[in-house]
Length: 326
Image: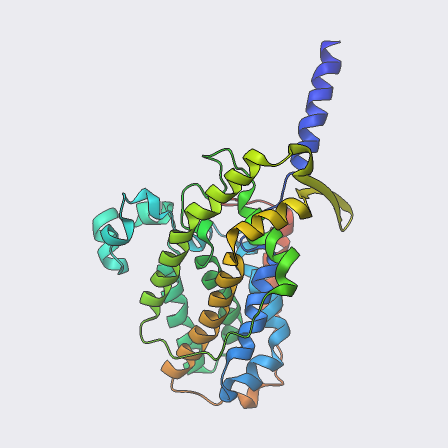
């Protein structure tokens, strides 16, 4: 009897794990949308090159998430827990990397996330790739940079309570950045205007993080308020995702939460899109505005294809290194 009870409990816990709400950073869907639409913000000098490579830019927008399964230090590049730096972190935390290291140490900074600094690093790397006219690197770094910029625009990427685990709201990470965009994306206005040259990419990255941090309390409080008054038997639903049956936030619950957020997800996606395009454009300008039209019909090298295939293999093996939002 005892063994039977243990088996039943084990089975139930397994079902809860299998059907738990999923959470990828911005969700694969949203990351791909951000990179894809950012292509259309670019000036004519860049549009041809990026449009001819839009499939790569879109599909590989999720590579940094996959890389977390193979690269030990990758996870730190996706977030920054600002609330670990006191009551006024944006005042107390130095914006320049060297100054921050002197005050807190590199290990401490990496433990709490480095996304704004890494965005600045990525812009410099992309600039170098443009200057060298390194086709493979331009595409890879463009896709990756778009990912990190997208992450910086997610409120829950700026707090230690990144998945509501400290407030009994586990699952809210994927709810906000994955479930809501998937449900309501078709109603969003993504005419965001043209990319602009950014004088100070690091300052721009910090601005994105500051705006996200300002919104994180609303993300958590609104869901807590809705959960307190909503019938629990209508909060979740089951949907087919490929060959799996997944437990997700119901469409009705999602709609109520989305209304309470009053356009927040759309605003953060819009800002991410134009920032991605602007950072690509800035790197190209800083590299001397090389002519890329001659590379429009070129293909990724076999070596790069093999490298990307290896990353995907590690991802599918599921050996996560670093913080997960599940």
